[in-house]
Image (cartoon, rainbow, N blue to C red; front, side):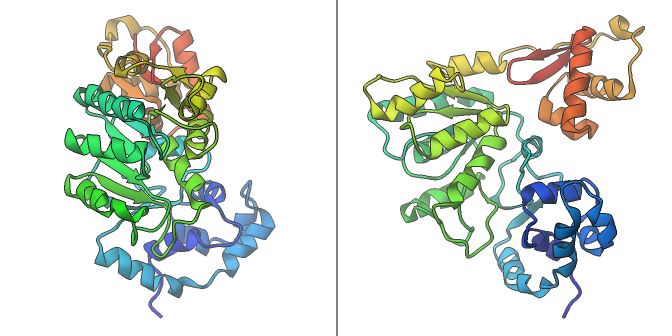
Amino acid sequence: MTPPNELVYQLALTEVPQIGSVQARLLMEHFENAEAVFKAKKTTLEKIEGIGEMRATAIKSFHEFNVFEKEISFIEKYKIKVLFIKDKNYPQKLLNCYDPPTILYYKGEADLNQRKSIAIIGTRNNTEYGKQLTQQLIQDLAPYDPLIISGLAAGIDALAHKQSLHLQIPTVGVLGHGLDTIYPGHHKNLAKEILHQNGGLLTEFKSGTLPDKHNFPTRNRIVAGMADAVVVIETAVKGGSMITARLAFDYNRDVFAFPGKTTDSKSEGCNHLIREQKAQLIFSAKDIIELMGWDCQPARFSIQKKIFVELAPNENAIVEALHTSSELHVDQLQMITKLSGSALAATLLQLELKGIIKQSPGKIFSVT
């Protein structure tokens, strides 16, 4: 058997019993790559918080590296991009979630780290009202060059993808199955058009994974986590869109919802999210643009104003990053500074209290 390479070790990390996405992330915070995980001593693995003896044993007992030959052949044949959690092209906003996928399989050309990204979701059985809202929303957002993310499902998802294609806005469909199939089947042409127009199809499921019901809530966390904000157009009080919206809220993403009639079951979920204060009520794209701060002019860095301020190393790293780019989203700051989520949050707060930086809507930071 050919010795495993790094890709094999990466795939293997997703198959070790009792090692899910949370544990894989913990491991990759301690090791340079996936190979190092499998070659580490059991005693070293045991000492990692969240791993312990049982999971360390599972890692050291895993030897089925040859089972990935078929998957690697599929990846190579169809030019699939495998995005490991430590890769620079991995959607960096997902790293601010506690359970980011260890591996993502990607077909397409859209930039998954585009500066502005909006997830648009809703019912599979939309009304004409929902259709008009979706089309107008994307038309009004188009000048801001966002990445439009949705789930390639029927209804609002499909409308969001189609309007994006019509306006030549990059769009990515996040799938609840492998890249060897498209669900629903009648969206095959839509999927082809997304790829043809330099969009993308993204999934954490390997080839051969069927669109089973339990895969879609898992898929929804990617939709929620890789966007700056989630917009709910129409939804019943139960369903996938509500799961996605609540996940986005838990991930500290901005969540927006269009209100509807109190007697309309397809608006019941949106109204419920607004009442629970888990979504902000919006009437148009203008509300999103204002609340996200997309119309704000970047603040200019004033060296003279800050010259006498003493900064700690973490504070200096953030200020230097903002000096270079004028303004950055919190996820971009974490990617540049390599600070942990808690350290970044604490340092940003200190800098705000000192009056050195300011936060704009949409978790955008700039120097004052």
